[in-house]
Length: 455
Ligand code: F0G
Image (cartoon, rainbow, N blue to C red):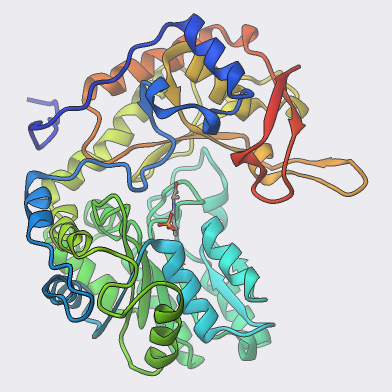
């Protein structure tokens, strides 16, 4: 048989509330044409993010019941610590409530004003936390990674020649190098083992540690298994262990490949930064053995990390995005290729080629997907990355994308078939899609709260 089935069966279900197009129009207008302001119950397929939105397994729910809620030295801490030491080979486990807390604690403990950190692409919160500490965040992904329709197996790779230039010229400003696996900002694209290894060696030559942002490390490992010669027969866990072996530390939002609804951590190989990091943790997150999480959260994560590395799960996971990609290709809808691990990024300019950028085509497409089929995605275009300058002029982003990010183990193939039909219908009616203008906006991260009107 050719169909790849979901490698699980469903034990507990949550109904989806069905809505009509008329109701959705009313709700979207009440939400000021901004899908972030919708109530989740009014959405049929909620593909806003894959972060913290997935389904936990019965084994995870079982583990929740044995969580040790002791303030200090809880058994659940030691259980998770052992799991993480086994995967990463790093000694020190510092739990945080989510990814950006790990970033905040690490950066504010070890970076200083005027520093510079290279990365393939910094995720928004990573960049924001660095910049908040006066650190310059430099994106050095390979040029192939910036061309949506170009096929390349590892579009998340970092450009080593450019990294070396930075190290030669500004090495004194670099406290560590970073690498994001998979590269979310660049379309959920993987980084090859060869690139991780070479980047680590290059940093080492200049005496710099490598800190990886590992939210989607298991998806990255599966891409390595599928695409990098020599890894075809290597178990996923061994691939993960090798990836981590090149790093000196990592930050993680466990809300992704940790398969949990909340959680994060820092791992460090040496104890050089441990004291300042733990002190900052105590100040802003909690005692070092719980760090802003409940004991039950630590237990669910200990189980979730192992489940997230299951090969049949990962095969199905990557196939999901690829499957939707094939349907979009057939419908003539452009998207970032090849499809990444956790999401499909639709190129709105291929659906709305005639809509001027001033009418925010990716935002307009996002609204159209909701109106047509109750699908909630997120605009990654000129509302998110453009700005209104002091003098009132607007700047625009180079790409107009809509990200559909998939919660883990939550939606079945028929949900994806339905979505593909909705997207094709939207493309067929593209002439009727209305652009928007911004009526009210905030200075930072305006997409979350912006109020829009039809143009
Ligand atoms: N790093 C990456 C690569 C991420 O994708 C995220 C979150 C974070 C760090 C921050 O983690 O949310 O737990 O504080 N990405 C989510 C998304 C929000 O929708 O892509 P967090």
